[in-house]
Image 1 (cartoon, rainbow, N blue to C red):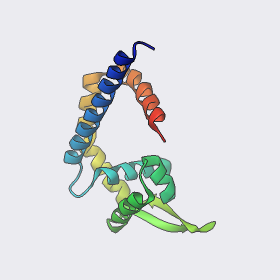
Image 2: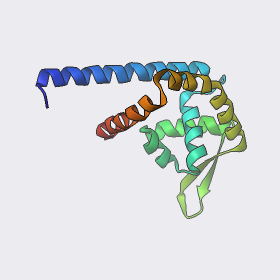
Image 3: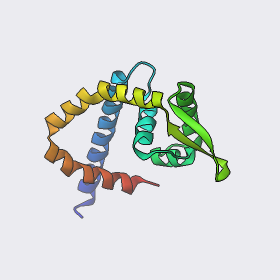
Length: 146
């Protein structure tokens, strides 16, 4: 470890860049998503598309949000017809969430809308540089996880 003042300043600079990038990513994606779709909706649809059926509690943990916040997002997605929520036949206290055909179509439409932003990012930063950055960002996330 270097000197405490330098380390603190480095940490502040890192956090500042990550926070600024997060705000710009969310803003850019929110402006690009199809009308009525929120970032949280897109994120959940994308997650369910790749992982399959999940409980609301598993989804809340995956996104680091409260069960109440996830319930709110799931209700909106269900009203839109983008997800199915059914009882867990093995444990009646639980529910299982899966993406519907309409949800897959909405996710694909959103992916088409955001793809140019993704391509611009990869083209500008470069594949090799992103491959170097990802492990550092994953480490940062793991350090900060409760």
